Length: 114
Picture (cartoon, rainbow, N blue to C red):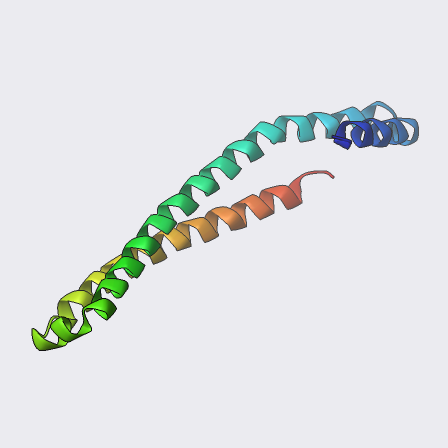
C-alpha cells in the first residue's frame, strides 16, 4: 500500500534532478503494468496446465505401485510405462513453454526503467 507514496517521492526527487524527462520513464512504467499483469496471468494458467499433466502422471504411477502384483502378473509394465512417458512428455512441453515465457518476462522486466 505504500508503493504509491514511494513512487510519488521518487518522482519528486527525479523531477527536481532531471526535470520533465522523468515523466517519460513514469509513462513507460505505467503502460507496462497492464502488460505485466497479462503476462503473469498467462504464466499462472500455464502452471495450472502443467500441474494437470503432473497429477495425471503421479496418478498412473500410484495405480501401478498399488497394484504391482497384478501389473507384474499380467505383464502390464510396458503399457503403464507408455502412459507415464506420455504424461511426462506433455508435462515437459508445458514446462518448456513456461520457461520461455518466464525468460521473456524477466527480460522485459529488466528492460524497464526502474
